[in-house]
Length: 207
Image (cartoon, rainbow, N blue to C red; front, side, top):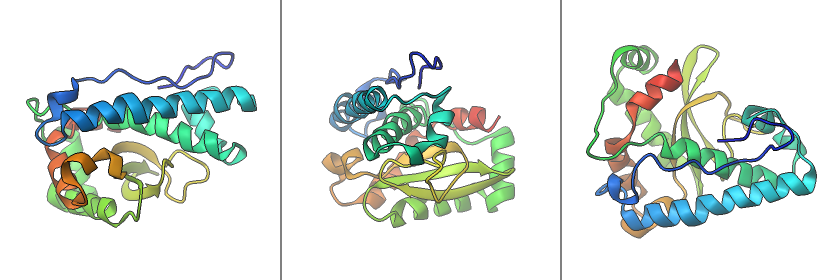
């Protein structure tokens, strides 16, 4: 997601772990192609332009986000957009590779939220009540799992974020993520998105 060398610090666009059409029928090919090749690519280019222009130095993406308050709006917004989308792509899996929460993840979700279904309800609520553009998140915070949301391209790693933690799962609720297929029906997009969540990746992030 980011080059670790201070001399060459830059964000990169991760390759998709599936083809544009592989999330259908839940997320359509055209949306994925535009989202990845246009929106995400622009965030990566723009944040790297800002890093060069502002002389930003960091050891890692976490280091970059821990100092977001010192950067320009361009660096903040595009840095978030670059990282958030890499994280989002890897939070999903091809529709023909459906997985379910299992093992340690199931235990942790049950202990923190009461059940998998209650977790999904709370996460869906966070996604639905984020006004305008933004993201819904599942994070680990001081040994406990928390659900929240951030506006625009902010994320829970940023020092400016009101909602903080180590991200485990993310959902993009910007209109460009779903409008071609779902129009104004964000609820349908969120409901169908659960069918392509990569639970194995969430388990790995949990550690």
